[in-house]
Image (cartoon, rainbow, N blue to C red; front, side):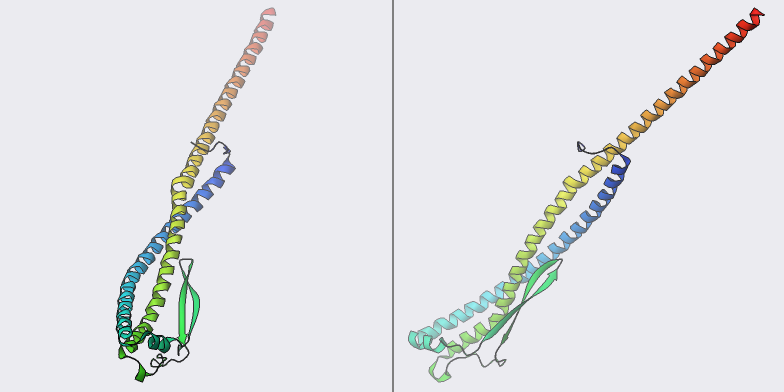
Amino acid sequence: MPSTTVNATRMELTRLKKKLKTATRGHKLLKDKRDELMKQFLDMIRENRALRTRVEEALMRAHGSFTVASALMSSEMLEQSLIYPKQSVDLNMTFQNIMSVDTPVYHFSTQNPSSGDIYPYSFATTSCELDGAVDALSSVFQDMLKLAQIEKTTQLLAEEIEKTRRRVNALEYVMIPEMEENVKYISMKLDENERNNTIRLMKVKDMMLEEEIKAKRQEDAKMLEKYNAQ
């Protein structure tokens, strides 16, 4: 049913047709955006799955090395070896725009770029398993940061997909059908009014024609009466 507040005028019909055209174009653009977001989201999910598996395996290896190191070293020596870190890390965040969604990009840098400058203890007093554990954690740090970035990106993309999906559905199932119904209703009302006006004009024309015929007959009757009187 059309809206009860719609005005059945040509100006309103023109306005609604323009609005419908804009809504239809916007609906197509939103559908394209939703499809592209879904493609990006699925790519991120696949990358996230592979990266999470790699990170979990690396963390398990590091945990295993720490377990062996803790078995070979006393807890006091292990704590003393790791209590003062030798390397510091600077973490920065920028943003990347993916289909109007600002997603985070993490960057980190170490105070000393040397890969060997990550051990805060003397090699003579520690187990080689501890070296392997520290090296494993240092190697997996970049992947962990990338995993955090991807998971945050997938969360933001999922939220944007849901918002876009709601907008697409609102246009497709509510706004566009309502506007089409209103356009159809106004067009029918205007056609009906035009037919009524045509019928009224024809009736007025018939009435005027009848008046002319009546007047003509009266004039002819008067002329005949006058002629007979002579």
